[in-house]
Length: 372
Image 1 (tube, rainbow, N blue to C red):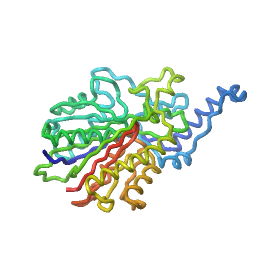
Image 2: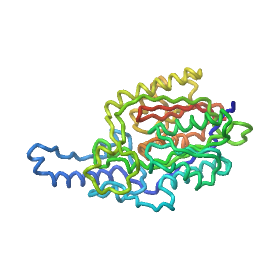
Image 3: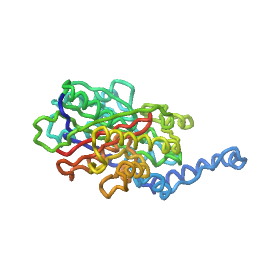
Image 4: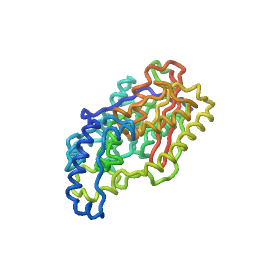
């Protein structure tokens, strides 16, 4: 059996940003248009008028202040509120592959590793651009990586499930190096016209390079342990499944895009995740006082604050549980990896931390690491 290390991470961040104020202005204009078109039904009491949103509502509900997207103009068009992602020809790189390659190249550069020396590429994400061929195989080709590649989808837990899958292969000796890539184009699956969720998601891509922990003379994190769990629930779902670039039938979209029963999710996911982490730590004989940092799934600040307090037994100190939610919004599987990538370099040898992601399924995955 071989030991496993994380030797590099990379983050692709889109160039376009939507602030809460910009999003609220577009949403409220859409609501006014819809209310005007349906005035007779609203007056008759057969249809409810759409309520305005506000930046204060968004921050209070989520902690989100802005989000990065691949296409800002389409989202902020009150007559559309959906990104414009032009259909690409079959001989052009797909959107997910393009942003995934960017993140992967940054991870490889950080680790000082050539793509040709990678044995496995996993594209692990909530939302896939197509059913087949696998996005991971396309990324493998664009990188000129070796070995093999495949896609996997465990919703917002895809990154940690991908890390466990790659780590298990490295431990067994079947591979030496793996890239786990999380390209999340969440803007194309979000219903931007639904006040309850129009602010939640942003776009991003992350990559994590894992290697055998043998004679490494570069900065890295030892992967001490991984653990995953699932429990079926339909409270968070996306019935459409694959990336929709055009929107010709706006009226047919709602039940095919991202949907969640927020109250049930809060009630059921929080104890599930907290207990999962507690069991994982107990199994590995790691006390709360041994943890220097928590890199949690970036879905909602209230959820993270609750989990952090349950795990540590107290309110986390500044820096112990870093959030990137306010800048990136919910980026599905990529969120915990963004937090890890941006808030781990200051850790000292021997410091331990825990990466955790959770979401639809329900699913939860945790990775315990130690700075080498």
